[in-house]
Image (tube, rainbow over all chains, first blue to last red; front, side, top):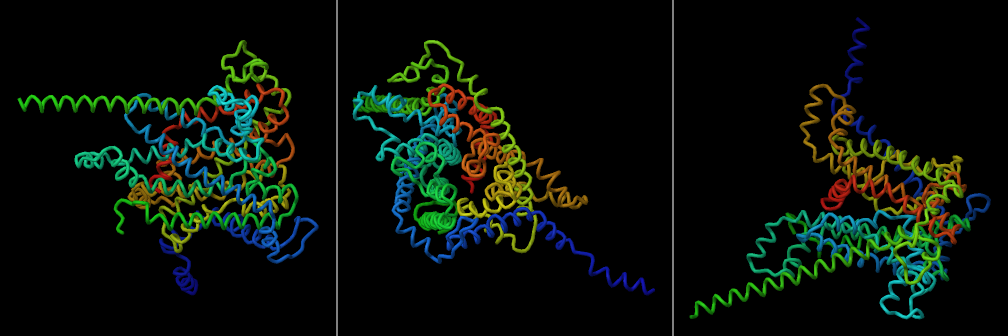
Length: 312
Length: 292
């Protein structure tokens, strides 16, 4: 009897409702992400933010400097230079990459023969990334025996006025830009997929109304594609500010720091000179810039991104 | 008479239309072929230079057809560098990272897509917002953390984080899971399936295309990944192929053919994967970008 009552009183407390079970299981399922997020994102961010107020090599030297690193950064000519270099690269590569990818996608979206073959050819360079692309382009851009200067000579440009590419301060960043543009095939595929998802009725309707091909592009294609372009531009800005591998392998930041990108400088400060506090401050400024740009593009999107079915 | 004139006008109009059509087609194909030529040229140059005799590699302007074939570049690096080890390390990174992200991202995405729990929508916004965080911000603490564990100069720090789910893959898989009818789950629940059964026996088999996309992205990323290995690894026997190629290029300046040859064969798996999974690539872009 006594046993019975305890069993009865325990039962309602022990049994979980279906909803509660579902909730517990769900938390269990997302736990890998939650744990990773707490350690490798939240924890690491707090640590990194803290570090940026210290002068430390993470071994013997640890000194609190307050905002000292940030103040020093904006008086550091190399850091200012890295800001310029990265912004120059980003401002060139994002619009140019978008336009080139869009043009190719538009051409491939016509009724053409060998469409698949063309698509593969334009996409192939995008498969060559990381070290392979840098290795290849150290030779393509080699001022003396490189493919590009060879081609320019064929076009009749005299040897003396050929660009020295990554050996010259002026042409070093354009070298990296060229190399990146060569791999714009991923953007192209994305735009092509976007173009192919535009309903053909829209074009038919516009044609009946007498629209020429320019107006079709301006009033149908571009608005319908704008969400894809928007999404892609945001991703490209974020990625372009993190440019590292190309600069590291092609020029190692040179000549005379002409290709010292922000991440390149961060790498140098942290892993070659062991100023981890200073490097963390660079990382936070990089983050602030990326955040600012992303928010700017998102804010401006109302003006130029068209969402079908959205009420204004 | 007037009828005839208008008829002539129509014919004339049609023929100018035809001419302008032909002209635009010619322009289109010229641009396409020229562009394709520019895009493919560096790759062809690399292939041809990998088998050219030395004097031709350095010829200006470039010579395309080798006078005779030199296969040395494809053979000599294997004895000069631990090429086999580079490949082994790359394959370890590719397999563990891909496996890790497939398992962890899919189960997290499943919970976000199919299960109800408090804070779900807010947490998902958090997942998405971490996409904007440049990895450089967390790089130094992560490095310090793994150094404390004694994992510097091992491959471990380069794959262990894959098992905690990647925001982009969680997002992509969630988008896909949302397209599968909910009745599937409900029917399975009626039959007494556990949540794990629904995830493992129903959703995973139905989501092969999306999982394929994640796998393909992960494989191509880790085949090429450079910065992580550069930071964590310092001895040659731990180098993946990306560091190996850079090493080859910097040490082997007199033997460009070898650099070109090794780079060419390093690309083969990527090209093969692309040809097999072309549809997946495009599908992945559509899931993530066009509908995102």
